[in-house]
Image (cartoon, rainbow, N blue to C red; front, side, top):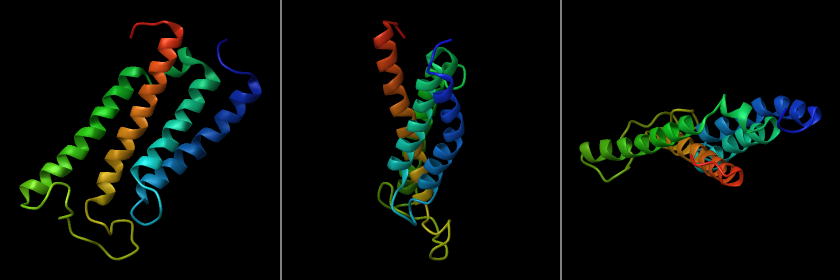
Length: 144
């Protein structure tokens, strides 16, 4: 069986949900606390890379494949562009905040900023995962 020892796989299986959830928290609360799309996306990607290293590439690819990561990266980029174009259609500058602002300190209090952070988080997480896959495939000698 490819991957690491039973101890490493067990610890990874226990840590993965908490690490992934922490990354999602950083992405979703980036407009209220230090963080946002980039650091949250990096944490999410690190949690998935932890699974890839612990269980091996063959088994991990059944959960998150190279193609799925490419699609997610495209969706993240598309979300950023759509938010920017929506701002232009509303008659303001590219990515300027035009959505209604909520109450200070609430989760939905920053207009389009949480949506932008979500798009950036998806793009960063998928991009780092794609870079990791590319390094693994180059090391294995695969042509993907």
